[in-house]
Length: 71
Image (cartoon, rainbow, N blue to C red; front, side, top):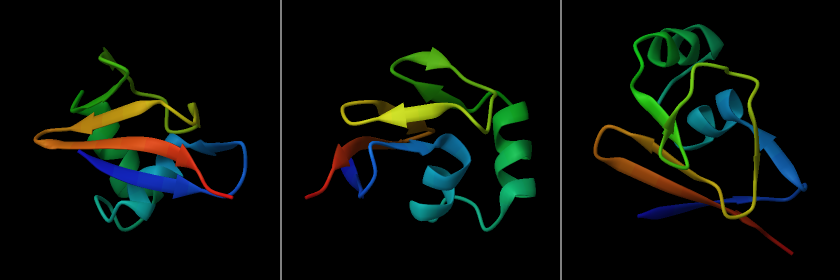
């Protein structure tokens, strides 16, 4: 499992997917989400604007990312 460090209190799912190098832009993120390949904390998620906070776990296929808040 990898971590994605954020500087604010939250990040949107589409931004995290780009930060984790899983997609190049919002259109790719939207397509990935529409295919049902993304889960947040074990639940399927299709909203690119979903707010993620420290401790949330995002999974895409074999990739898992935990959101952590940096200092």
